[in-house]
Length: 210
Image (cartoon, rainbow, N blue to C red; front, side, top):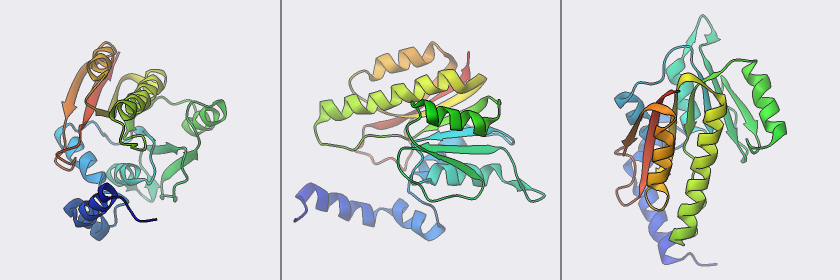
């Protein structure tokens, strides 16, 4: 089946993208690592020894970068990185991966076992729906994923913890931020340079869970 013009345009843009080329050259799993890199440089919420949960982690770029940043000492990994996704993901040394829907009891039990009773310091969510091209439907699905991530964070984050989530500007965006601000000391909106200019995506960083 021939590709649509929009699909052809996306492929051409993707493979000429300097961040895609850089990710391939440096061994990163996705160009999204450069968004996280910039976000962490501006707001250094990642600290040594932290427990980090990466929601919707596949293909694993963010988990890969967080694991590298937390590092290792005397041959032991420092901190913990737990990645969750409904899609399979190739293993990353030092990252615990749980395949499944984090709303399901079996997945939450696996997470609880991995945490061993410890609370989470930082929750990351770069989740996005498969884009259909129908703006209203895509926005609704994107905000639903963001809501699920916020609910997860409300349950698992320790007091004072932080939550970084991808959002798409549009319907329900302002209401989402209003609700987020009610549960955290500070919420900032960021647009990394690696985000494509025409994309409505931004990131909300919520610090200091109350």
